[in-house]
Image (cartoon, rainbow, N blue to C red; front, side):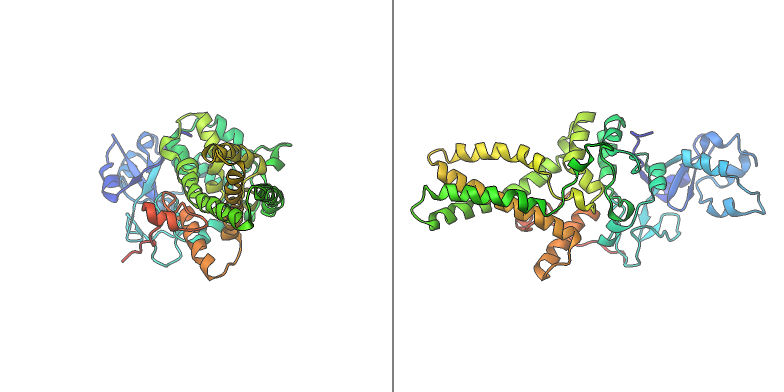
Length: 372
């Protein structure tokens, strides 16, 4: 059921479902509600109730009891209702649970992303198993129409889109699946090629209103500083407007195209920087805003605006390199923080080119917690 979210249960909660009225069983971290299957179990209802509230992985494999067919596993797949909560790095049933996030470092995975380290972002997703388990998007099919027609609730969509996937070694999963597909992909080098020339020309035009280049530089740097704050505001309150996102297909689809697809497939190198058409749509209001604020001097407004555009160019290039390049020492720390924003805590760490505004507004990322 696409609109369903899958909660976590403690062991005590699972063990309390041990009767004909409500019967839960587990296999590893997965929790299944087999209440409707009790009376139709070939071995009798008593055998099911004997394992009510318990892990059944061993009994399913026990040929001395009886061999279980593929149909039995299909029944379980349809009965998945949630997952066991982790306790000190171990599933609540007392069994060690290797997972995509478990590398033996003792770091507790984020309960919503299921990841604990940046390497997890590049682990290829089992497409069939992922769709079967989460009932969200099939990565082999065009994503846009699945989001539009999926009937997902906002809560379910946000839960899933912030659980990163990795498609076929880093290739781009299909968005449109037709002739529009190239429009959804932007190589990193297109950003400086497209935007540096008009930004430079704008500075040249602005310089006509100043007695010296010092005046131009002063307002240009002011625009660059404004961008650093604007970058934080846009990332936090537009790209991550999760709480205020309309709970309908229009809002969800718009969110997916604007930023959701990046969190869903964070290592897709062709969907890391902003397509020029989208940037024009976002930048045009700021051109008008700059000339409204600095209404007394067109040249001042243009110099400030061009400084902001250069800030954007630096932002998009930094964003790409944080995901895909080995970087100098200062940028290694930025890389660590930004990738934590993806795999550990997407509700903090909104600064990309600098963590300065996260420190100011209290949204700094904290170090991953470790089990004791």
